[in-house]
Image (cartoon, rainbow, N blue to C red):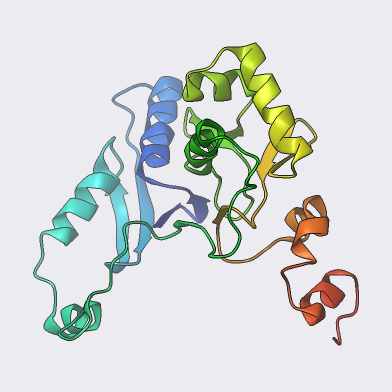
Length: 219
């Protein structure tokens, strides 16, 4: 799901609420604030709200209102096949794993568990570890990662270094990325991510894909 306010695309409902709070802090709680807003959702399609008084929680309320409407039988039939069952999904951009590309056997079960927790912190399409702060997505630092993994900061530095030595992770400009061979959140493999893990990706990608990443657009 994504939301557009006055032609400015924002990420999600919490960001809309932060947008409202910033306006109230700047102009006062009673300041009129009417905008046009578009919500796009995989389940609901497009919701247009024109010149609505924007208040905290309005995007969430709009979604709840639409979700409460009856779902058409055609949509249900596409999602639920009588022979195969329900087309199961919980997130528009899931974290994916690939058979045949398991984590290195040298990793302990404890470290594999930590990598699973890290995979839940991936930013969509970049595979960067991130966190939300005041409605923004920011790179996850090692101290913040240590807090999420329940480790000391020194042990977390050792863990990250070990993962980088095995090319399960990579550092770039102070940011942490996970090798998409093991966990990938997104649809398209960016040039940046390819360059970070080129050595591993070249062995699993088709030759023509590798050629295109290396400049042969006619491959």
